[in-house]
Image (cartoon, rainbow, N blue to C red; front, side, top):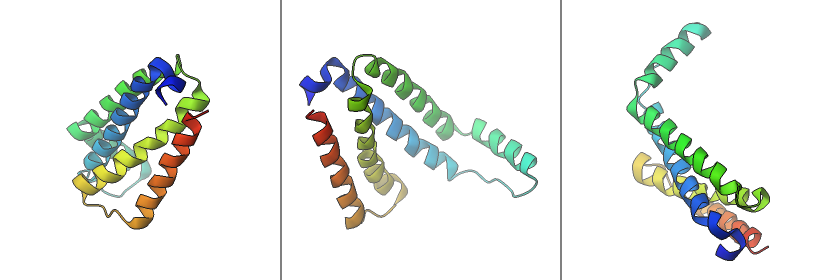
Length: 127
């Protein structure tokens, strides 16, 4: 796989890891929001203010930003049609982080789906 991706391989993996961690932080932060139902504009403003004060959401957005910068660096060196399918590897990270940090179930069906995704990424990386 390394030869097909060259020097962008590790940059892609780090970008994927940071993006998945950012997603988990956003979920942890979202779980702490207490947005009261009301008129759309009021609810939106209330939600945005709570998000702006939430360190988990800020951290998640920061990790997404870092991930995006690394992604741009990676795709400048690697074909997008080869690199982009690797983003699906984030499903593995999110699956197990959700189980460990959020108490979400890891079912056989979910594990099977992740294995199919991994196999697909492996096949694409062979080209």
